[in-house]
Length: 262
Image (cartoon, rainbow, N blue to C red; front, side, top):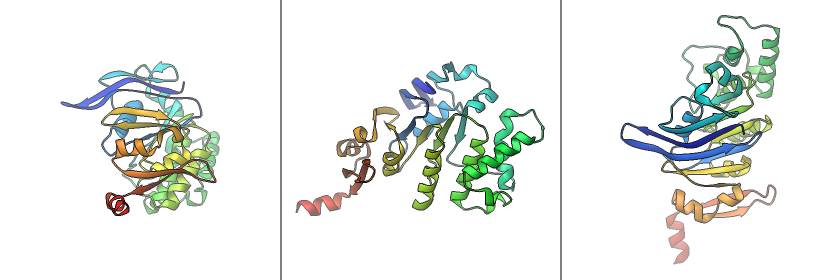
């Protein structure tokens, strides 16, 4: 088991955000979290990468309670790409990517020959070698996301956790980012808001609503018209795409439904 949440609950003051959530991700699985806005996806991920601490329950990372592990040890096992990645100073892309080497180095240590090779490989994998000397602030949204993923790659962790990696990107860049993530052959846990993207890339999906797991399974098992109506309160038609044999979702508005029934 790569990472597992065991009956995780979390509250903010008097508001319960997560209710006894359990999930697991096996080695080299691509697992998605979907659910309406405010369902608890980001809060759950933050508990899983120890930005937040559960009120109850455990996060197990490689068979050990994450609370018993040191920050550097965790960073060598797990890399995180959050929704927003603010950069307070105007670093070059290469400098940003190189920051991922920090868990493997002593404080103030300079990059050695091995670091340089790893950084170059990450830039190449992310398809941004040509941007290495550009200022990070000058990049497009899709380019910035690729740079942050490249930084995660230099950690050389086997587990990658991402929170809405396609947020604010146009469809072309959404697909480029998801193709990049899926090509890495890492263990992936990702929160997604686009259900068709979740259907295309995920091996398994957990559906979360109101801080609880509603169901989990393969995209075919989970993404049904009944489930989408129950969880997202939308009418939808779900077919299997002829090329991928993955679910393809078409949404129907209340107006369209009423017009069709007249």
